[in-house]
Image 1 (cartoon, helix red, strand yellow):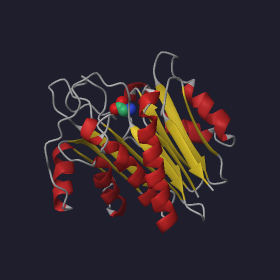
Image 2 (tube, protein in one colour):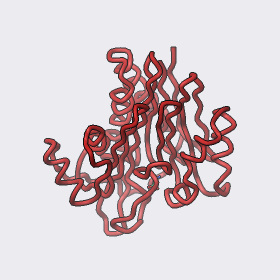
Image 3 (tube, helix red, strand yellow):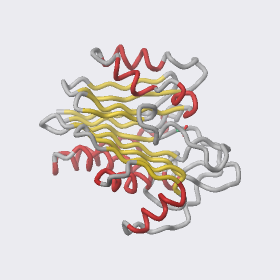
Image 4 (cartoon, helix red, strand yellow):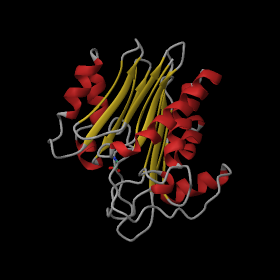
Length: 252
Ligand code: GLY
């Protein structure tokens, strides 16, 4: 069993305790259930509920002052769910998780809101963080005792971007990728990560996970913040960034 969590590329080490708490919660759920999807989402929820992170309650604001969230979940058995521009839900990652068992894999804006309400989530004002954010997307990758992998990711996006802007986080192959061999998440400047199809290209190089992630980070200029975390089904686990990125691994 394994879990790796990150608190966002560019985030200060001061929030390491929040990432530790997320990993510990994910680990507890993994031990109890051996279910990597429940573990990865449980870890992500801890950071969505911590105002210091750019996700859920602490999300940065769009250029008109509102909060719009993106989130994604995917599993090694070939399921995925992603939402984008979801407004005023406390835990967007849970809405994305609901899509795992639907025919539709991705919903945006009004459609995402309607889906969330139909699934029983409460729409409630998410204030977001008016202060300049110092961190990006949060997320977790977990692996069960029999090698199943899941990834979960959530973000408020990038401060000051326009309403309706879509970053890398909900985009398959850019901000997340998962199949029977690997689970990968990216964090950082969404436009740059998307242009590089970051997670899918890292997967293509991933026989040696450490080298692949270091290669992936170097796809972007040094001054463009990016981080990547991943678990391979043979047990390799690694995370790296070209900037500060609070990270926590727990494994047995
Ligand atoms: N990486 C999150 C975003 O750019 O939206």
